[in-house]
Length: 404
Image 1 (cartoon, rainbow, N blue to C red):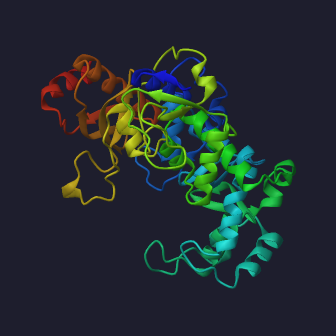
Image 2 (image 1 turned 90 degrees about the vertical axis):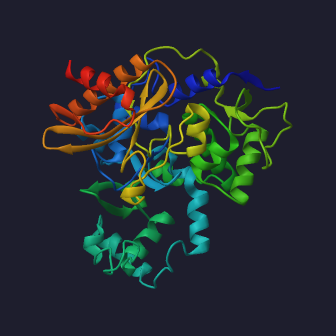
């Protein structure tokens, strides 16, 4: 038997699980936030800040950027970089659970490039001279496009994939690679869960982070397919993942996959702890990175918030609708609009602001104003300049609110 939830109840559970609703959202600072969300996606784009900083800011407010760096990349390691939803920062306790992925990479011995024969020699170099950056081993590029890696870069990334080396800190934006046996606590290195146990453990983490999720959401969070997706299904159906079936009204029916159910049955899974009490407390008002786990999956964002959003950084300028790095703006537990930000000296520039349809227009303007003001303060800007408002009927109200 499944538990019935309205779409609104599911939305509030999701927000609390993601640390965007309630009084406990700031508990534990940045390390606590990282454990709650389970994974923070990395990306090279930096507008107001890099995405991994924006995700922390969205939940914690004007947290010091040095505190974010310490929680992600510190000595001794409290986190490490690996492949989850994408390239992510992950709490160090998750290291053993990714053994199934490291073994798969080792068996395949290929991902984006053929592994060069220098890989063993490079491992010896890290052992003798490490920690090392790509600059220390001959550079990352051959000179062509971004994927035209040098043999040393291909080799060191393969060693990271298979767990021989690990990145637990960065210098600037360069990864620092060291032997896993030196960087990862010995007790974690000694753990060797099976593939099934690893997938079940990560499914549990994904479920806690997402609060309420479809099977597709869980698969997307940890990016499994084939036999590992089948293990996720088994972990759901056997209870090994610790999640319970729920039925969310208005969410699509389950189709395909071994976790499929008849139309009258559950269409999602939930963390049972998230169902024990009603989500209450203060909502965060904040712009969200497009790589934030609240909205990183387009189908989920549309299902929960009615938001159809994609990153337009790689779309030709003349074809962009919302802007280069348009950030959805969360206020009152809903996505009220989007802003495409930039920075010029001590001025935060909103190159384009747009509002989503529906809801209170007054509250939407107030939410956008508050989100822009707090973000400007966080990055050290003392002025805000709005260049274009894509919702003309609200342009005057927004400019007046910002001028108050």
